[in-house]
Length: 252
Image (cartoon, rainbow, N blue to C red; front, side, top):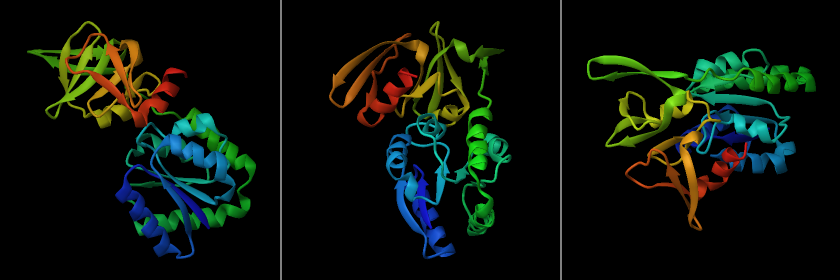
């Protein structure tokens, strides 16, 4: 059986490969891929070689759903995720399983055994049902935040947010009118909570909304510089590894 692992955490990918080989030493892991961009490239050229894909949800450059925007993937998928709040709902309707991290040998064995037992009945219609589920059962993204300002509690609509940034292990929300408010979520968590059509993780420090980007400058061959409003104190750059997904995000 030929398998592809799409996972952005190296140790997690290696552990999953080890568990697969413990389950069946004859399994061939053709590649371990950390990003949406690389996954699309691989699947466009080699999907026909695969029997099964193990796919994480939150990859290094975007959510895995972006893969399905680019290609019509006709390969069974077992999802691995730490965020079961929407994956369970999205994939319970079809014959493909999901595994919550950390993946156990018992869970992996049950998922592959389920896949094998259903393989003979796994028709194109089933795959279409899976892809339809991916498109229709999207997560419910956050629409507002509760914040404390002095002794007052108020809500901020997501549409009012210009960007989020991290400074000295504290995350701040900056509104379009320039308010800077501390919030209790990390940037990693916010990335999963907000609509990826509206927000982009520019770098480790900034998660920016489309509406706050006023200009984009070519800073060097490997960097873009973002001009945001309101203007933050540190300059905001898009690194080489994120330039392609950033441009795709702008051009949606």
